[in-house]
Length: 112
Image (cartoon, rainbow, N blue to C red):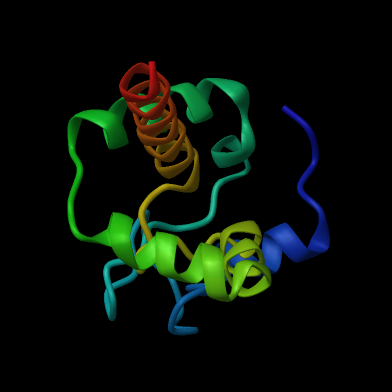
C-alpha cells in the first residue's frame, strides 16, 4: 500500500467534520467514519454506488441542493473526507443519471 502523505496522516488523527481526536474507526463526538485512502479507490466507488442505489434516504436531496447551488463546497467536503452530512456522491450521480434518462425517454416517447 502507498505511503500516506502528511495531510492524510493529519486527517487520520482528527475528525474532518468536527475536529475531535479519533481513537478508532469512528468519531466519538459526531459518528463520522475516519478518513481512509481506500475511500478513493475504484472498488470503494462501486461498493458505494450499490449501497446508495439500494439504501436511498433524505441525504440525496440535500446533496442535490448543494450540487446545484454550491458545487465547490460539496467537492471540497468530499475530498477531505467529510461525508456524514451528504449522500455518497457517486451513488447520487448514478441516481441523477437514471432520473435524467427516464425523463429524456418519457419526453421523447410522449412527443412521438
